[in-house]
Each structure stands twice: as C-alpha cells, then as structure tokens.
Image (tube, rainbow, N blue to C red; front, side):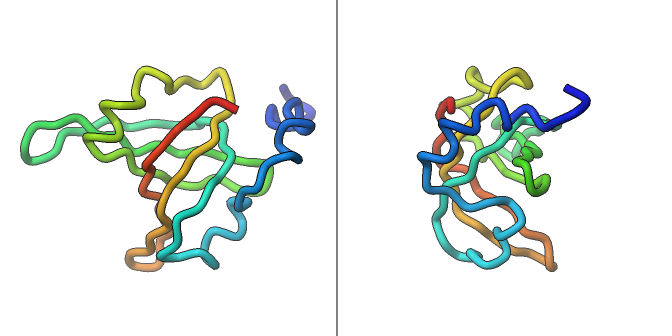
Length: 110
C-alpha cells in the first residue's frame, strides 16, 4: 500500500462506528473511548513482578497514537495482535508530561 492508508479499505465498516480519531485524543483525557487502529510498532517488556506487558503504536488515517497493554489486558488479548489487520480498541485516555497515552482495556477485530 503505497498510495493510501490500509484503513481506507475498511471505509464502509468504519463509517458505521462511533470512535475518536487519533488527532482528537487530547480532548478526551480522563475519558473512556473507542479508537480504530492499525498496529505499527510494538515493544514488549516485563513489570517489576516479572509479568509481560506491551507498548504498542497504532495509527488511523489521522495520526499515530501510543497505547499500553498492562499485564492482565496483555495476557487476554496478545494472541490477537498482528500487523495484518485493523482493530477496534477500548481504552482510557491518559496524559503524563504532555504525552497522551491510551490504557487499553479491550480489543476486537474490525
């Protein structure tokens, strides 16, 4: 896909959904929202208790955004995550030191 974003292939499905575009996330700090995203990069790490968690960057057609999958959520949804399809993410918008991050609570396929 050089000429367009892969999410444009899902336009008919996306237009039926209620979600927050990535470019508007800063207006929803402290709120639970839904986003649409294509997985871009990921970094797995371990907590102090040696539990797996992951930081994942997603993008929609407006911007790239950062998410955190804490251990319980990561364990529940890690098997679903790949670079080959779009996702619908439920999360809480948080801000720390001026950076907006989404604390993911649920994931499903678009």
